[in-house]
Image 1 (cartoon, rainbow, N blue to C red):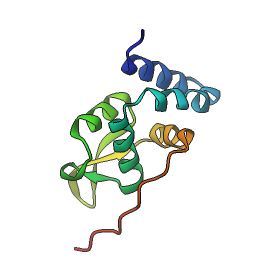
Image 2 (spheres, rainbow, N blue to C red):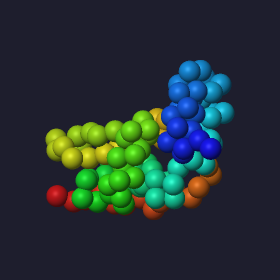
Image 3 (spheres, rainbow, N blue to C red):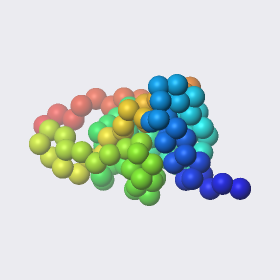
Length: 108
């Protein structure tokens, strides 16, 4: 049996290899993600970029970075944020999962 991380790596490599693979392999990635990784991906896509102290799960966030579905970034001149990648958007859209509620921008 293949480990989920191996399945994800294989499917993402296929996504990046061609335009056809982009959409054909995205559902495979979604199916291999754990429920926590799916929730973290949803948060990054719909509430991101997300500050480190506000992520659903640091472990799931780290896994998503390893898979290429998230990346570290700066936001409004500050570091310590994580954002979703284009691959993450395609993977999420292929799932037809319900998006998380968007949060209003923080007022400074």
